[in-house]
Length: 120
Image (tube, rainbow, N blue to C red; front, top):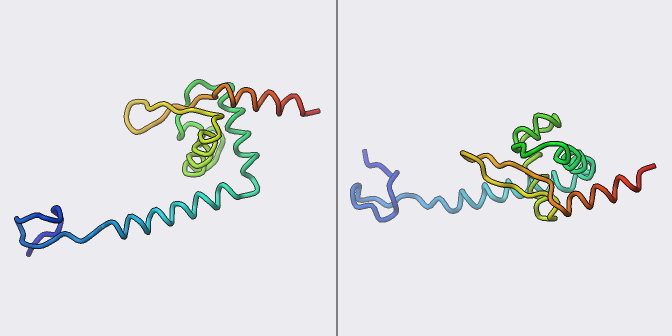
């Protein structure tokens, strides 16, 4: 039985490995659709405010820690954190392993102060 697990130009088995880029593109399309649904959900501002409030009192929680503390799915927390990072309201730093520690940025603090000053 010939193996197809090696690279495209592998001469050990005399066969070319299947092209995986189509599967990767399909996977990315599905992920993008999920992110779009989360980001356009009506609870988005509330979820992002909860994350910002949490980060204002925490010191470097991971995505998993934020999700657990706020009782939301890890994937949703990750999408919201990426959105907040793109707005400059949070920043992340790699820790050991694949985890990231998250912090409130100066822009995030300014945003929270403006929001808190508008509340009655």
